[in-house]
Image (tube, rainbow over all chains, first blue to last red; front, side, top):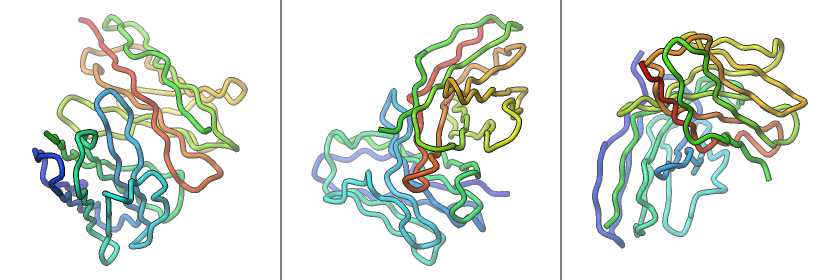
Length: 116
Length: 114
């Protein structure tokens, strides 16, 4: 089975510019997650979708970050405008069972963002 | 506040020796517990999980983990380490209350020396 796809793999932008990341989850996975992983730290959940609805976005900086999941499949995470502290790896993950906490997450390779 | 702690930044072990990577948590209710591994230049991979039942769970690549409710711990173990086990290991917890948000620890780097 194909894994979680993400693009781009790397992105370098200047502060105050905007950037978008794309994620395609494993086919049939209802739940999709976006994480931010800063160097030396564990992943931090930014937003979680169940189908195309938001389950949790309590840690998403909504003044600059936005995310959508059209038709309950692909998802896009956007940052506008970017700050230096947004430099991190952005991970997308998906899991199989809708709303069930017990099912493991499958992660994509991540997008490494550098803001200069 | 709900949290996950991995008290060791790095664990060093000789090949063939047993290894333990520690994890403790502070969450409400009966959480679900996970271990993930991140190899260099690769994404996070699921290793094993505890949902309910037997406190000792077995996962991929010969790893196992022991759930201890009284000590709120979920330590990762392997009887005989391999050089190829060298990677970054993350403990994760999904709390009973407060939605489905998964909380990750900061990670422990395992180095297995030949």
